[in-house]
Structure formats: structure tokens, C-alpha cells
Image (cartoon, rainbow, N blue to C red; front, side, top):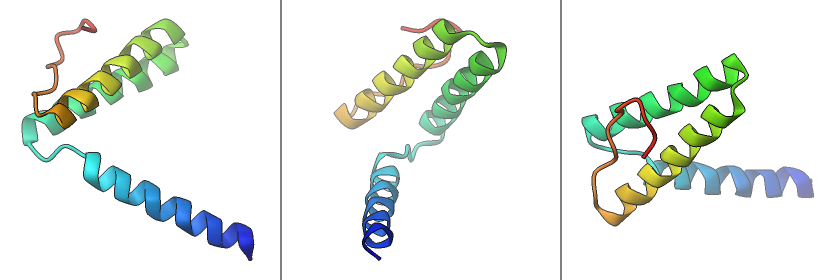
Length: 79
């Protein structure tokens, strides 16, 4: 019972976090999806360095959104 209860708390916290941090603007959403796809593609290729660079960009874009600045567009190169 305890693990089930704590699991529900963690699930609720994650759900709230994702709802609050998800981009609302179409351009930001598209940028986020493109960068996440870069992570998936790099992992599929077995390219850990590219996956790490793309994940870093996803984190930086999230920080930019929370600061009220636009996400970096997908130029093909991490910023």
C-alpha cells in the first residue's frame, strides 16, 4: 500500500510538472518536438555524443521558455 501511495504522489507531481513546462506556442512546440526527435535519432544511431548534445539543447530551451525567451530554432547545430 505504501509504495502504491508514493507512486501516485510521484505520478501526480510529474503530471503537474509536465503540464506546467510544456510549450504552448506552436513554434515552441515544434522546436521541442524536433529537438526530442534529434535525441531519439542519435540514440538509434548509437551516437551518445549527439544524443547528449541534443538533450542539453532541450534543457536549455526549457530554461529559455521559463525565462520568457523563445526556444532556439532547429538549425541543425546545438547552441
